[in-house]
Length: 120
Image (cartoon, rainbow, N blue to C red):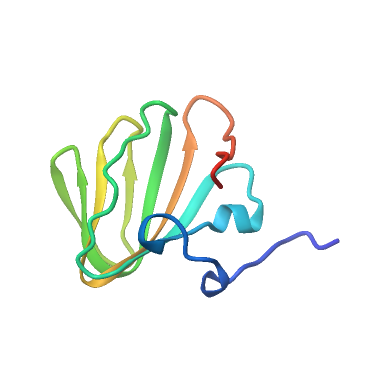
């Protein structure tokens, strides 16, 4: 048995609203933290949300494209190579620019071990 798993983002099904989510955590069966890959078409507004109920801290890493992350009323520029960490209670929504936006989200609760959600 191999001590690793691998998956190419191009081989993952497009899921979630508008087919923008690639569920990498589920494909690799990662148990210690959550993460997914997002592919936003140009000028797309994501889902506004927070993680106050789960105390989940998130980090976003921009792979390509451009856009903004609206966090509690602030507009943060998103560009390739940028990391953005967001507190659980902060309200956030990603917005892609004219070239679209691809990013990875990584998250885990601050007060307990991560438990994968039932939805994937």
